[in-house]
Image 1 (cartoon, rainbow, N blue to C red):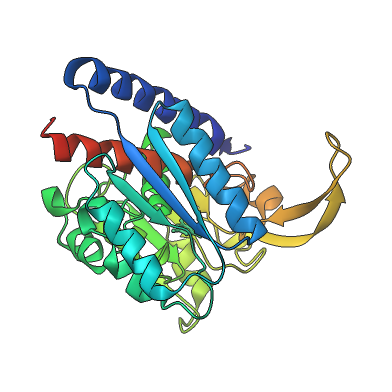
Image 2 (cartoon, rainbow, N blue to C red):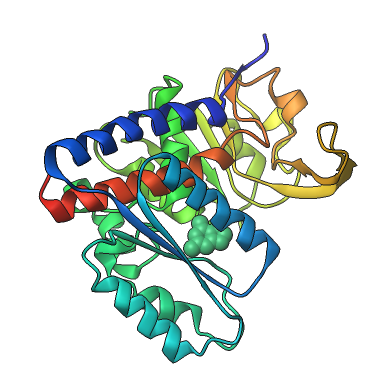
Length: 302
Ligand code: GUN
């Protein structure tokens, strides 16, 4: 039987609807508007596209959103001063500095300068620590892993006691999603294994997974025979494997492929995310969710 396709596009739209209502209520009852600033340094086309998407969504949800463009040659000192300005601005609840930054700027220094209570990316070491401690301590979950958890929960998979296998140990996906899924509580409480390039018998681990999360960045790494029948497969890979002419616009667009052999895997898994349209649409939505949370916390709204 063919797997249920987990549509990140549909689930993201559903969460955005919920957030829109929350924002309206915050405005009406408390006169609070979530404020998000996205800082873009230089003119990297991929970064412009990401930031534009974030700003568009923030506007749609009724945020007070600011796009702050800075020249490629801004000094590290000036960028740190800009971050500090937004740290002190009570109208701003979320600060995002789009990565990558130009080579003359120490990325870590800039990310660490963001007030952890406005760090809606969840990249600051304080928030990484809060996530590890878990429970109420966890403030901002990093957006892609938070989106993965939502996809699993909202598609009805039981996480408690489930064997979760995470392929990949990056700081932005592998390590945080492993930490999220092992926490005690709703939507987690799983038995987690993290496998990586140093793991022996990768296939044997994957075959045990009730929930398989793949974030390796290797197109088609996971073979259909590695998948447990009926399991939930979350493919985080977004690999450009070529170009094609868009049917809509006639322009050349990237052909994207995930880390899982989707066509074959969908005949074995119980549910699976497509690429594109799976994990991707969730990331921006979770950024919005973090910003709403930040605004509520700073205004003392439950
Ligand atoms: N560049 C690519 N993805 C991201 C992201 O999620 N956050 C930031 N700050 N920069 C990025």
